[in-house]
Image (cartoon, rainbow, N blue to C red):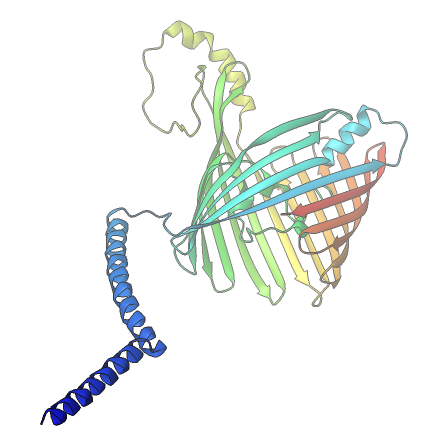
Length: 417
């Protein structure tokens, strides 16, 4: 009996040892180890996910309570270096030739522009331009420089496909309200008068606000601006100038656009010397009535002189562009100023060989009806694009201003960053 009992215990011990070995081998199985680690990592991931959900709920609550038009706005920075030089093909330069170059608006020098453009509310645009330049003055050899400064601040609000409003509190120009606001380097001629747009588009008007309406093939824009705050008028006071700009563009047919634009300027003067801060515009109807009779009588004669000098001025321009084929284009414009009966005009013919090479000829002129003075200018240019960021424009210019005749070789380099 004892032998049977001992045999049973040995069998039981052998079975227990086999069971413990199987458990140890099961715990050392790599697959089971990976499963256990996966279960532990999943629990940690769920804890981290709960924490992230709490943070996202806090951020969404902050955005709803602290709304701002600059949220999720992206700013693009563009830089442009414009270098224009001229080699005069003549030996002696006197004051008459220097005045002729100035009237021909040959603006040689280095111009640098930094543009910061921010898109807000999906369709609106805020643009700030900083400009630094070094150019020659009216006299040959007189070079003036200007440090980097804010040249323009504009905000364009696109209400819809047919209407948008523009506000330019600093550095407004008529071209800001032009239909084609995005100008490339190809729109820049070798001289200002030979550019593809009338000179009135380049006039500075201080601060302005305007809007543009588009309907099928007709686009119209209207703007009101004020400029010259703090500018002295004669010796009796300072004043400002109110300007109204309007433009209508009609697409006559495919590739033919006709533009009619006008600018009306009304100077305002005051008989007392007061210096106003920027963006301060006096438009009220209340006037001072406590001035003495002596001061009024003393300034009557001087004010009478100024009322003859300060008169409203205006310009009207007509521009026509047509495409002869896919590459050849012909464009022209003329501008009339009613203040001094000045007439300016220009005709340009250009042809594009390929995406990187273009040539053209421009014939322009000015006429002063009151003095019987004429000026003519002939230019030819070859525009070469060396990549997407560098443009080289070579050309010749001939200016005939009375007895002054000036031939010159022109070179313009535009480097975009």
